[in-house]
Image (cartoon, rainbow, N blue to C red; front, side):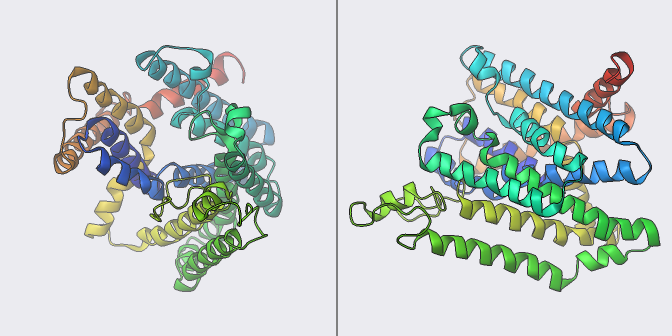
Length: 383
């Protein structure tokens, strides 16, 4: 359900970039884009990774079997990401080596998942994974603050979904996924009752998740503005704006005009928000399992779940509609009309994917193609 919310948000943002005729409105949207965008999506990818691997171990699969399946699955994801990069580069300026390996969303997510994969596969201790994930986040912030974007571009600047800091979200998400499986989902498997779901949905636990995230964020922000701490530049020789821009704790968190620019994923302050918001959303939406299936909330969340399960397909299909920009459709819609058109196209895509799933055994979805290719790799070349 959270993946579904994220993919709708991401798709709308991309259409907005090409179709809306108000550049100020687009910039305003971008300021808040990451509040429900790729950062949380990456965290959820890490959660799903751990849940998938732990599920296979729990049903008796050997290390070799788990390794083989998960490796094939992520290899196919990486290959699809590379093909996507080639296609996009072809339409937007030509294909070259740098463009092929640019960290656009499909390739960037695939790489982050691959980096996180060994830690989930080997069931690395949680504290070690949290430390490693935090190192990715901190190095990402430092790299941007100290302009390593120009000296080491393929680690920091080659696309917004570069490994530093984004793999950190996936690694830490994997820790939470492992926690979910062994403290909540396993209870349900063992006891055949909803004790686990009730436990994670308790108000006390949700409040602790939120409170912890807020405390961490505020502490980091306080450190960031404390002279002599947190890599603060020379206060006497730099204005406040320059201090804010150069500080890796809050790098880009605020515009010079004071407007909060939360869309900058390279801020440690923002990273703490992503992690806290993801955990809070998961714990809150867990209640869906106790909601009456005839309830409107259940039906609405079921739609989000559908978009989440087939998020890969929706992302690929939405790119086809961006192609309309080449036929005189670019930057022609008002913000209001933009919402109407986007809602209509999302409905059309949802209707098409639903037909594929319901009547054609998912043929026509990217998820089906990926599953078939994963199976082919196992059967034909023994991976």
